[in-house]
Length: 422
Ligand code: MG
Image (cartoon, rainbow, N blue to C red; front, side, top):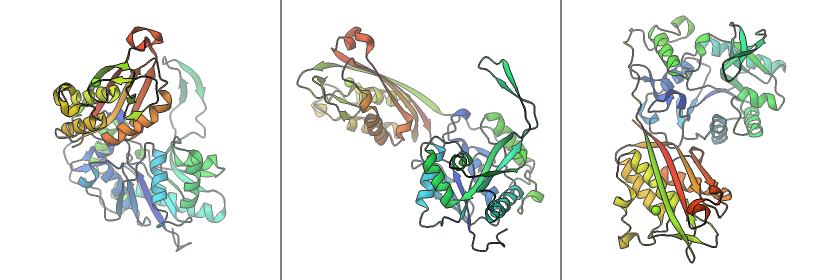
């Protein structure tokens, strides 16, 4: 396929920074086993490695990923810690990081980590299609897509069928999605972080994209039922050797792997502090200008105290009053970011844990807190080693009711979900 253009280089990029919330597993879904000792990510990368034309395969994980070092990946794979809070950001960050290694003309195949049953023959057809279309000037790139054979209807929120759709011409978009490096980078920069697939971004800047039919086994593992099906198909030797150039990993009929037990822990935290003159108003580690400040033994950062109690509660590590007593002179005027960091260390000693998400409510009549929410989330995220996108902080005024409404004090509630890294 590269014969028509021997200088054309082909790379693959596997964004694998997601948390797979729908599977409710203890680890991100790409690290669940699809065969004994074989994670979904390893199986997916191996499927790409069966395509000889692909040079390097870049696997993009989140900076705090604690699993990837423990799995076996093919020789051609390189792990980059370039993951972002969305798929589009992960791909964009990775393309940016590879600017010195890739030329605008190189082809990049972006492939989901959760499609381990990729057929090498489909990928070869995809690459040939893109090279021919680009040479002929008929399209900018192509994606694998599954034809829709079922009757398709629209359904409303209560489950009532509302519209019969014509399935003629409908396809389910899969991956890899194949485009030239320069074009893909430009398209993702224009589309922003919310775009869900590369073809959408390329089409949005006017690029024509072809759909190349692929095997229905290219489905994405999203729910537990998909995982069970993927395991069954891999155990049965799919894709078959005829569909790839190397034997499949499970020729010996291994037993089914029991699903990994989820280890998720919820923590709840609450705190309140009085408002007083002559004190600073420090919340979420951010010094916020206000006529009154928060009063307490430490810096009285009620948000960080609630978060501290939430993480301690999740990991069964006691509470903030036990760890940092308010009659201990050591904590007079203490910076609560240091207290949260110390509590997180204590929590990690029972882990390692990762923050899946943190959700907080701050009840304060004044000052206006929305302008500071992002800075607070960044402060907390840095301490907990997570992404600010996993942290929500929601200010409420309480409609002048209660001690918060009378501006006597503020209160904070925090709920955290921790996932144990294996
Ligand atoms: Mg407190």
